[in-house]
Length: 104
Image (cartoon, rainbow, N blue to C red; front, side, top):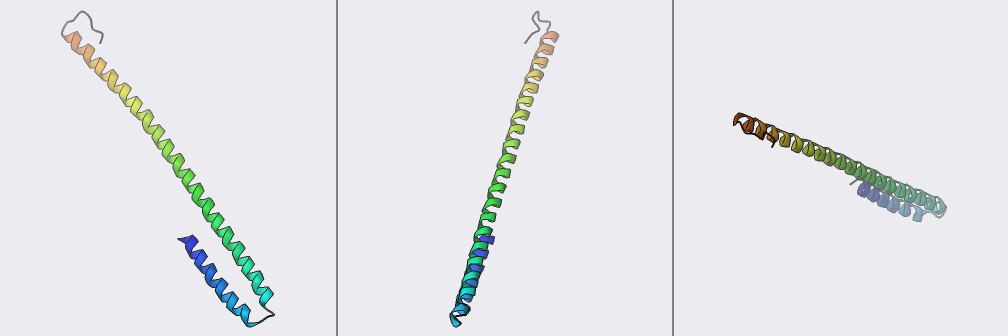
């Protein structure tokens, strides 16, 4: 949105400067310099906006990767804890039933 606003503002400014520049030959060179300056500023603003967008996307990607890694580690931990709890329950059950082999 901001880029579109900057481009629209630049186009409007260029139109106004060209209109004023056409009225006087003495101001033609000055108008050309102003146009060059506006074009340069617009290019810089567009580049900055692109850089910020890239930085934001990179940060978001890193955060998603970190969250996925933490979730994976937590799932592994929960699976191990669940397996251990099942094994403990099995051993207690075999113990109460007086089985010879209490290992599960």
